[in-house]
Amino acid sequence: MPDGRFIYLRWEYVDRSRVSFHHLWTANPDGLGQTIYYGNMHPGTVMIDAKPLPGAGGKVVAVFSPKHGRREHAGAITLVTPRRGPDDLGAAERISRGEDFRDPYPLSDRHFLVARGPAVLLMDIRGRSRELFRLPQAWVAGAAQCHEPRPLAPRPREPVIPPRANRQQSTGRLVLEDVYAGRRMEGVRRGEIKRLLVLETLPKPISYSGKMPPVSFGGTYTLERVLGTVPVEADGSAYLEVPALRPLFFVALDRQNNSVKRMHSFLTVMPGETLGCVGCHERRTRSAFNSGQNVLAALQRPPSRIEPIPGIPDVFDFPRDIQPILDRHCVGCHDYDQRAGGIILTGDRGPVFSHSYYSLTALGYVSDGRDRLRTNLPPRSVGTSASPLMQLVDASHYQAKLSAHERDMIRYWIESGAAYPGTYAALGTGMIGGFPRSKLDTADQSWPSSIAAARAIQRRCSACHDSSMPLPRYLSDNLGLVLSNPAMDDVRIRFSRHLMFNLTRPEQSLIVLAPLARQAGGLEICRRSGVPSPVFRDTSDPDYQRILALCRTGQRHLEKVKRFDMPGFRPAPAYIREMQRYGILPPSLDEHTPIDPYATDRAYWRSLCWRPRRSG
Image (cartoon, rainbow, N blue to C red; front, side, top):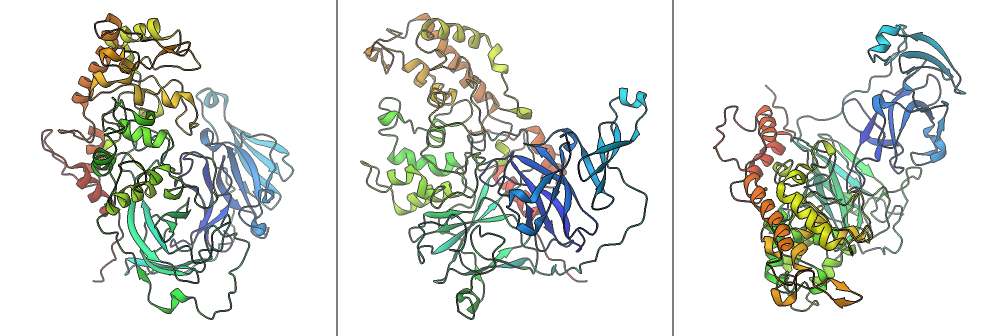
């Protein structure tokens, strides 16, 4: 940039769509002052390859590539004028006449070099272009393309911003002027927010897929760590010390520790940096509000240290931390024999998730960020305040009398993204119908038991279960459901493979219980003309046995491949390879040597934490 800052694309997905927010940010060369330049409120465009226009008062030219971006970052050549703030849609002006251009380089404030397939073009500010160079046809036949055109000419050097990060420190400081100053704070009264929950989005050591499973069903893409809380003063200010060089975000909590407003981005403070913000999602074109006081209340004391929450794990693991609470208080009514309200809260395993985890998250009992395109949400629309589950564990729901600690366990599990595993070692393992390379794995559909069961389901169930109320035929049959942001009222949610197949107790699979006569131990849910009409009179029916055989085959397969919460689980070879490459696991590791995935993850995260340089 003309003032010495860097401008870059930042792709982020903190409790919102993982494929829609990739916008322009700036920072000093030493990492200080990271801030949005343009677009972070507006999903659906990859804004990349930005460069400043000479003598144009801060304008930049960039490629705006549609949606999640096209190959080689091809898109529309676009001018961005930042004077009206980072959220003004009118600040971006498309100048190209197509969306297949790349790598703009400004020669002046009116002319640009651009690449397009095998050619380099000169484009003017009206989008008119003229070809300057084209690769030889033999190269084009080999799929060669032109990239990054540059003039071999001198240009003035940008100012050099002196480094100000203090690398002898391990922390920085954050000053929040007024938590009530911001967008979409309607209905939030002064004095209502008492503290900030500090969370950290945790890096993955490896990724197998662009989908969320098994971390979540349509929700968080990463694990989130609970660091603790800091107080908010009566004037809405907060002053806190935070670990440097770590991606942090915040939730404003009320007196009952319920969420009021949630941050859907992250910030990073450099060592020794003091970073300030006006409020929660405040408009960047407005200056700080003058309250008339000389000094913020929070600045009249030393910075708050983040206080861990007693008895609360920093990284939640649903089977370890939440399922025991459900077993004690909920399963008595929400098992397969009763299914009160049609909800199952047992820890029995489905093809990817436990039945309880899927029920709570997919059926809308937990309000997380989902994979939504929306941002800048109203108060109390995400987290514990918007989660029906919290109203069911407040001692008013029948015999569910949870202790305060148990309610807090559920509370902070929700606020930390409501993930299923507590380790990234779960990635790429323990699933039937996972998503390697973002494609649904349907290898199970060739199993003989799958073929036989699919035919039985077609024979006995398709008369009622047509496309308006489909049933899965295989353990990997996703019914065409889009995982990115499925509608909660989509009938396929309730008939999902994640509920129909029980791979812990196959005979408790809903796909065999629902059509089985009650006198034979079934649920007899199936009806004709509103009258109960069991499909299977007893368990000796050959088609019943064929469908049950599929569930048992899935059980045996899962016992062989192991899920993260099963005895004998071992991370995938690729996870072990990467942890060895990072120096976390020893280079020579016997295949029978046990690996603690939770300890391994923690060692990996510690290895990325900033450690001050020691002089001498």
